[in-house]
Amino acid sequence: MEHLVFTLVTFVFFTALVGIISGKIVKNSDDQKTAKGYFLAGNGLGGFFIAGSMLLTNLSAENLVGLSGQSYAANMSGMAWEATAVIATIIMAFVFLPMYLRKGYTTLPEFMEERYGVGVRRMVSILFLIGYLVIGIPVCLYAGAIAFEQIFDFATVFGISEGMALTILIVLVGIIGALYAVLGGMRAVAVSDTINGILLVLGSVLVVVFGFIAVGKLSGGGFIVGVKDVITYEPAKLNAIGGKNDPVPFACIFTGMLLANLFYWGTNQVLIQRALGAKNLKEGQKGVLLSGFLKMMVPLLLVIPGVIAARLVPGLTSKDFAYPSLVARSLPWPVVGLFCAALFGSIISTYNSFLNAASTVFMIDIYKPIFNPNLSEEATVKLAKKIGWGFAAFAIIFTPFLDVLSTGLYDFGRSFTGFYNIPIITMVLVGMFSKKGSKLGAICATIFHIAFYACYKFIFPHIDTPFTNAVSGINYMYIYAISFVIMLVIIFVCSKIAPNTKVFDKSASRNDGYDMTAWKHKNAFAIWLVSFLVYEYFIFSPAGIATENKNVVRIAIVTAIFVIETIVLIVKEMNKRKKTA
Image (cartoon, rainbow, N blue to C red; front, side):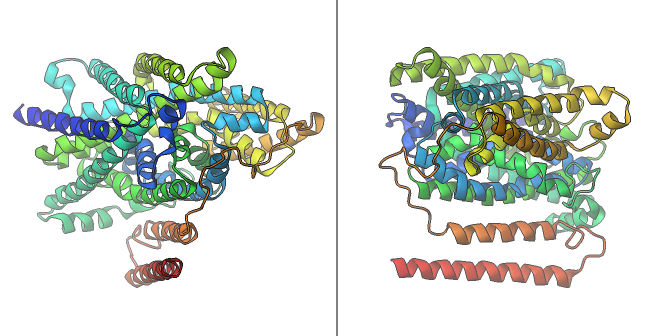
């Protein structure tokens, strides 16, 4: 009991410390007085805060619990969600972000109206809201509740059922998270995200280190023995090249996953709202690309623990218990409070990011243009806070119903996001790179996708025919790609029937006075990121360490090539900097 009390005290201390530091940083800002200030931090975010906030928004308890669960049950193929996101961040930094900032958008639906018309803007806004309130926020809260219950075992401590313990945790996290998002606005969210991100990285590193130590103790050794044990005991689990029956088949990376990552990092209001708050294009690109680098470090922090847990705590009743069980089993109790504060920060970050994005979309794209176009800036902020509380209440009430899930949280979240992510990224890509896409095409394609995906998820699995059985057996990420192609055909066919009448010039600026000077190191950094991605996949493959017969010479040669390339790029950029100084 004294260990539990100490852990709770340190947890509360570190959590309060983050709140106090964040409050001091943002207290003198004018963010509570204007819509730009509240929703976009007054366009005052630097690259460091953008990267920290984007990363922690993405590193939710869903990822902590879900990714480690996938590697616990299968292998490291699930790391593709994290590592390959770097391609999407590069496209965001080079293509999407310059256009967004040049136009001065606050939300993605504003782009939809300028490109397709007001009807498409409303449709996309509704898709975002449904996705955030029914999928995004509930999955985040439920995953967080599972993690805390597994670590602290409140059900046993207080003599209540596990379901009751989860419900209480959901309510507490929901209320505390809403305080951050509703009262603070985007700047408070970004600052607290960055501080919590530092704590989370530190805590995650400690989980990996102490996890290896715990495995090493099984053989009478320590950290090094534990690393060797995990690498040699079941090397197939270290394989990131997924087969057709793995969580992420390798071919999915180049089809549906690419589209899903492009949506998430290039069009999802929850993520891009940070970049839209950049003080200039340089800081925006720097923040987005830095977040891409940090994403490639995630497999080491979130996927490897699942492999460690498979060695340390085999036979768990649910793969979603792998990460919290590893924490409870391996971390020394004085450190658990720090880790729980970091975990709580990640939960709060994702949760308040969804809330902030939902209230932004509702106010900017639905309420204000439809019901009160002349609403003052200050009144907009006040109403947005009330809406945020309403959304939080809805999510808290809805979340406990996720207890009926039979699949893992990560699979559930990613697969059900497919109802709206593919239509949105399809409309954005067509809107940016083709003049032919029309309002009718966008609406018809979206209706088709939702109907097709609903059949795939809910109807075809219950109909026993060769066609439905074949479709039901296809991985949902391949379904993303198939639907994407069909949607393109629908958009262009409908555009023949009702041609596009909107004139959209993506190079025209609506954001006068905004500094659009690009980051001068972006090209070299992007090249290095792609090289790092290739190297990471090489290491976690049968050509690297995911085999019983490891070719040490080959690993050393490839590593040397990557290191030399890194040094060459650094020297080249340093010389460029000297010439321009």
